[in-house]
Every structure is written in structure tokens, then in C-alpha cells.
Amino acid sequence: MSKYISPLDDMYIRFDAAAEVLARAHQLSTPEGMLEMLTIAMWQGAFNPPSQFELNDFDHSTRDDPENWLCIPIPMHASMLPEAQRSLKPRPVEFFEVGRSSVLSVMHCEGLLPGDQTSWNTLLDHRNRVPTQQKENDAFAALIQTPLRDYSAESLRYLRGLFVPRRLLQKWLNRRSNAFYGIIDLRVAGPPHRSTNQPANDVERTATRPARGRPSLPAWDSIKVWAQKLNAENPKMPRKRLAGLLYEKALEKFGKSAVPNETTILRQLSRILNGSDHN
Image 1 (cartoon, helix red, strand yellow):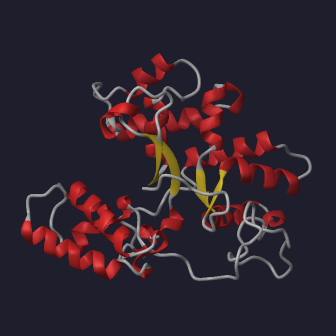
Image 2 (tube, rainbow, N blue to C red):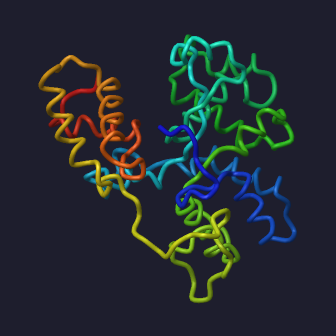
């Protein structure tokens, strides 16, 4: 998880910034129209990470690549805050890599889904006997057909603040229109005569570089060693707690840019610990 994502970040672009760039490139559209397009694409699953059962991703390197995940702000639970901060409204947020199901869950819990919240509670209530996947599919089907004008101002602020990896967005745009080749991320291959537009909000972007897959981060080797040691010392330690300790320990030794986020470490622990189960 991360506490802040800069507009100069070389991996992500906010939904509102992407909408502005796309509207400038498509003169018959507006930023609001492009934001609606991105929101509907998200509900359709266009920015979901690959399934863990992908046949061509045996080592999960594609699924584990941070450039295949949305990154969204999630308000911290009061129990996670210092006592002096627990009454704050709005609550501080942290950023997590997620798919559309998590976006749905967060917006539902925060009362940010469009229209009457009571109706959403009925649809998504965990106590009814409809399978969770069916409830989510019903919700996504409704959201795909809900125009942006039906969202509240607070809901729109939240949607504008979602982050999508620029490479992931560019791949999706390339399938939509030739007019958008290279407009968000010049690393993604396009036709011979690509747009010369700069990436959305990072005019100081450096030259093309390899994807930032998790295994390439310098801290990983040390994290694996520490994980084995800590697990041997306390095999009953919950995986979430272990991931947090590993993250903090790595930050002490390496710069933040060299350390995978805590959510990533947690997802990798079973593999690191020779297939042991998650707690």
C-alpha cells in the first residue's frame, strides 16, 4: 500500500487527468464524457488484473506486475488510526492495488454508488442467498448502464481520483481508436506514425524502460530471506502481520522505490514460504 501517489509518478495516471488528455485529443468529446467512458470500462473489467488461473501466466508474473492493477484510495478504518485521528472526517486514506470488485466494495461501504443506497444494500447484502459472484455481476451490469450524471458530487470526486497504470490504459485505448496510439504511454507499441503527445501528467518522463515487475525490485531477495527467518521463529504469525513487518524492515534498508508495497508482499508470501497457507 502507499500513502500518496504523485501526479509525476511514472506508472500511474489519475482518471481525471486521463479524461482531460483524451478530450483534448478528441475534439468532439469532453472531459466528463471521457471520464464516463473510463468509468464504464472499469465496471466492464477492462482494467482488471489477469486471473490467477491464466494458462499463459504459470508463474503469475503477469498478474503480479503492478502495472496490471488499478490503484485506489481506501479510507483507513478507525482502528488503524492513532486515537487523536479517529474522529477525523474524511478519514486518511491509503492506496491499494485492486480490481473492479474492490472498487465496488469500497464505493458501497462509503455510500458512493449512484442513486439510492438502500437499494444497493439490498442487492449486495451478504445475508441474502444469492452467490456473491452473481450479486457482483448484477451490480456491474447496472453500473455499466448508469450515466455519470446519476452519481453524486462526492462519488464523482472519488472516481476522478482513481489511478490506472498508464501502460494498461494505453493498451485498452489502442484497441479503441487509432487516434489514441501513444497518447498516454509511449512504451506501448502502436502503428508506424504514432502521436507525439507527451504522457498525460509527467512531462519529465525518462526514456523507455522495462516493465516494473515485482521480482525486479532490489529488496525482494532480502524480503525472501527475512520471511523465511521470521516464519521459522514464529510460524503462527498471521500472514498480514508478517507482510507488514517485512515491508517496514525493507523500508529501513532500501529506498522506497526499491521496495514492493505491503499488499504485493502479502500476495507473494505463500510462494516464498514454499506454498504454506494464508492466514
